[in-house]
Image 1 (tube, rainbow, N blue to C red):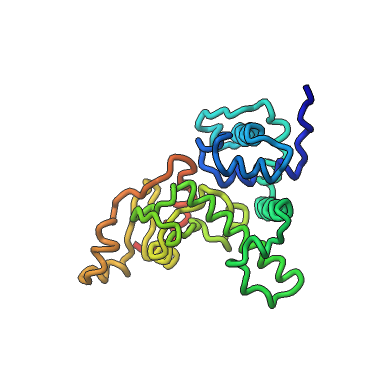
Image 2 (spheres, rainbow, N blue to C red):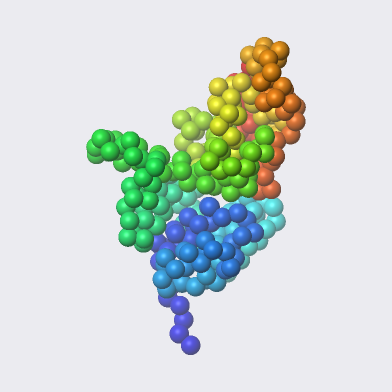
Length: 257
């Protein structure tokens, strides 16, 4: 019986790309996304792709802390990819999207026309950085929406078209945590904007806080309908990758009660 060839670095990176986007518990051979990646790779079965995803679970510190062991038989193969991600998240995520596009005989621009259509006039390094940022933010959104099961953490709205991946520590303020799912909240556009502008906040107990500025509008009809009803109520926290409390504390320090 012939043995399967060793996984290449590119194949492992593509498996890792899928690992970032799939909910825990859906990384099995019957999942359509697993089947799709197997077809893209060509020489891998859905079962072998699922095994690589389980290998990544075994090196993910978040799942290790939860006592989830995954499958550590292929640990030595996936660990270098995980370490690359830890040391340079943005570079590896963008590289993974670039490789995925190439395997589908497409360009990044063809895969992401809706998010980089307005960058066509940029040139050279400026364009490369801008494209990388847009693509990585899109991947982060996919990660956060799957973590929160496509629901706004405050209102429960479950239309993906209305949902945003909000950073707890803003993108510009901590480069190392930009793609950390524990630094994200899934919010509808309204609450994302309110969070960004400091009108609302989430405390370390995952409860919603309202600012003085917002409470000054308490006599208006919109206040109780969209904000007052949620004050001190817990958010719909995900089962995995809950918001990191030190990140929430960082944001709280800048909040005006």
